[in-house]
Image (cartoon, rainbow, N blue to C red; front, side):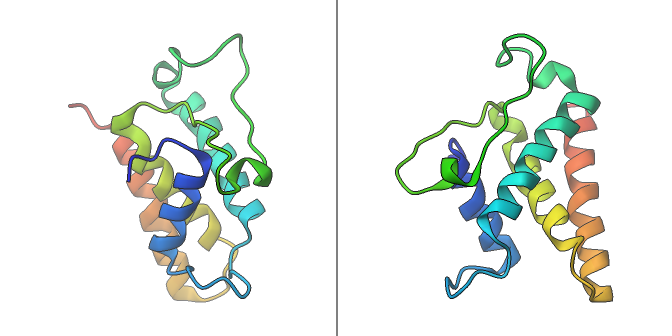
Length: 122
């Protein structure tokens, strides 16, 4: 999976969240797209250089659930090497709402993975 579009990110996140049965999804598309938007804001805060080539002005892209619909092909402006980090953030953010103690640990692991991948020197 290339992780080019909003739909790609939502699909990859659902796979890691084990939320692939559509009747209904455990995590709504709106929830996951909001997490994608928050991930971009966190990238802007932690590593603004990652988005410099993609930003016009001082705004970070903001997506909606409609952008995740099949066939929309709305591109997410993240460099290839940081795309999985965004998926980890989406998963961690989604699991923060769960009340199960095991989900807290899993959420923290995903969010820590996001941060470590952004801040890791190659």
